[in-house]
Image 1 (cartoon, rainbow, N blue to C red):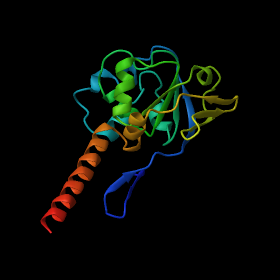
Image 2: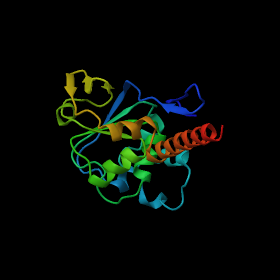
Image 3: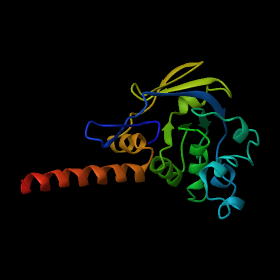
Length: 195
C-alpha cells in the first residue's frame, strides 16, 4: 500500500488525493527535453525506479538527484518534456520525490505520460514567472491555487478523470483498483443470487 492509500470497511483500497503538496522549487527554463530529464544513455540499461531517480536531470542540473527531497516541486518554462516519448523522463522524477511540475506549457506526450504515471502537470504561467529557485511552494489542490513568496496564483481544476488517476498514483494502479472493486461487486452479486 502506498502513502496515499487506505482501506475501506470492506477491505478494498481507496486512494486519497492529497489536499496540498508543499516543497522547495527547482526552477528550469524553456524546451527542457526528455533526453535532459533522463539521459538517453540509460534508457536500456537502467530498469529500477530508484536507480532512475539517481540520474534524473543529471545533464541539466548535476546537484538535483543528490539534493531533491520528497515533495519538492519543479517549476519550468515553455514546452517542458519535448523530445521523445520515453516514460523514464516522468518515472525518474516521480521516483526522486517530485509529485508536481508547474510549467508555462508541456509537450503533449509528456503531459499525458505524467498524468498516466501519477506526476501532476500544472499549467500556470503566472506562477512560473515569479517563483524563485529554492523558495517554498505550495500547490493547494482543493482550492486550485499555487502559493509562493510572490502571492497566490490560481490554476484550472483537475478534471475528474485526471484527479482519479493522480489519486491512484497513476493510470495502471487506478485500473487495477477499479478492476478489483468491480470483481468484488460481481462476486457479491453472484453470492447474493446464489443465496
